[in-house]
Length: 363
Image 1 (cartoon, helix red, strand yellow):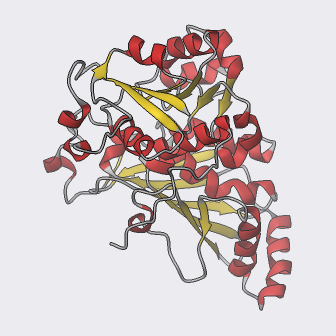
Image 2 (cartoon, rainbow, N blue to C red):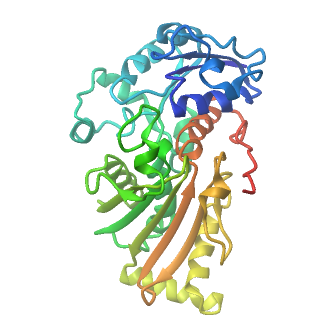
Image 3 (cartoon, rainbow, N blue to C red):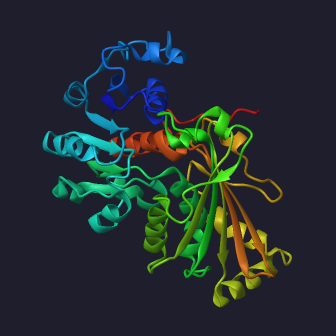
């Protein structure tokens, strides 16, 4: 049994973590902090938690220092640039830390982090402890890690869609287009002009075109998978719903990739998409949270809501010259808090699916 702490528990990702950890059989206690609501009760801030805390939490929102001191594993659900100090404390005190911000997503590449986030590292040595927290990429490294950089939500949807194609060398690396749509929770709980109901309701808009920070993280992942630099063009969009991400990805096939797909298609009655889908099914056969959908079934945000699933569909278009990939997940679960708990399970040797075995709602 372990004691888990959440620093930043009243943001959307933080309270989602709290919700998931409440049902985790290996978590004995949950300690939570909040700058905005310190001293109050979390079940007063979020009334859905009323009567649900049991013996795991007394509901009090503590200081960050109290949380880090009492916990075995600390989740930091904070703006970027803050988690380093807590990671340094955890490493020096034999604890583990899982960060949901961008602070530990770039390995030892401080220059790229500074370019996109405008900050220098304050504790460079602790980055040597960090493992990028994508189980589908780094499962074995995660098991032995003390600090985890939890991936971005858009990044997870794009990376999981592209991983098998890049590993197989099927697609060109000079220009892959990632077109993503996200629900409003992706912008966090703090109010802004763009996430007010009157601004985003019954509307659909692109934002941060060409300069969204997740572009660098997607490119980094794809380059690591491919073993060469991958150029990503990424466009995020805001859609008028609470949660969910759907990404449509356009990846031109290499000449060799197109020839291989054509050859494999012959084994599937000439169906190139079925051939690539079979490659994806094989690549993800052992993955508990990646579902490669059957032919004719398209991913939808509705069927991954409140779950840790990422649903994928594969198309071969443009006369057999391009892969068109569709990826769908819940940005608050597989895109944030669920993936963080999945990482915790790996770090402690628990079954990877523990507390994450949600059945998607039907509607």
